[in-house]
Length: 366
Length: 125
Image (tube, rainbow over all chains, first blue to last red; front, side, top):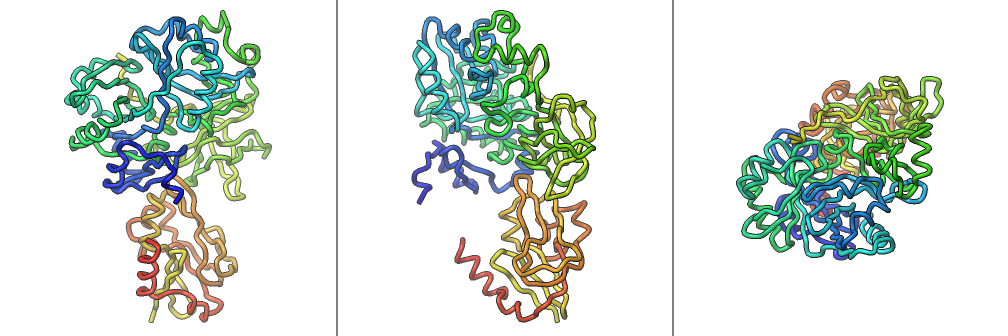
């Protein structure tokens, strides 16, 4: 029925064979979970290694003599200082400084590679084509797999010799199963790990080769979400949208030092004002004191029962072993450690404002 | 003797006299996934058939549990507070969710026995 209209990943058959429960996500049929279940998949990724199919994400190639300078007109990050092979998390901004999407920009030497959210792919492509002089080419017939967790390096090094030398947020081309793949040391779990961009027709063989290692398991979108929430990482559409600035999102660090001085990005006026005077709201972590999860949309109140904000992502953190959430609260009420209430099914439940992330990230920085 | 009935919402109710014990089936717990929180929200309240009585939360989402018959909710399984995963591990016994006093035993006629429930499961799978 509707399923026939959904895009299928190049390793769709592997999902079906592996007991995946498939769901629609941004026009793709993607695995929510496998037989292990969300909790065990989450723990497996934190303790061993998880293989995620993220082929639904948009991979775009930008090429042109002034591509870095042009791109800086759309994002607040310092792109011109990126060295070959290095990558940077940044955001597309609108004229008010609201976030159009969050993305990763990689300097691939003679061109720029960017990875954007599946749900924003068309919007982002149009935005770039409207605003960039350089060539904007969506890479078709590509797959994207992420191998995440403390054993990722050991596993991938046997398949793609040399990847162990990559540092966090850097990239390179490696031969995998006889084909050149673009591998980055990055991810969306708070763990060390890699993302592997490959020709679609190689995805099955590469995925199976990785999975032949006893410590690697397929992991679905359910655990991907609980892993990124524990790591304090934003999900576009929930934690970020076009009405939220990077300052409000507590992503002020994406604004490069040089960019703060020189400007030249959309929303400069509003963002400069927020940097000077403070933003009206700010993204924080929230820990319900009890066991009941507080989900997206849950309202947050101060102890005088005045509404001070709402939760943008909430659920249960399997590694934390408790409910966790992030959300936006009024800036003057955000002291870390403050006691607040969250309104769950008509009851005000006690909760605490906390720092993000909920786990200590395990990135390979040195 | 106690008898067990099943609903199309994938709940079971074991009835002994006028007292029913309610939980969810193995199929239901499998669909919900890892359960991390359970709350009976209508304790000591009269409920109609199909009224929401409890909330079961998995890692990903919250799901309502409805009463398979009308009655008075007389108790909740306190062990689930600290061990909600009992619903996954033992849905038909120690993972029971609430107890109720039935108002009308004839309502049980609208539920399924085990054989019919299995047929029902086959029909929706």
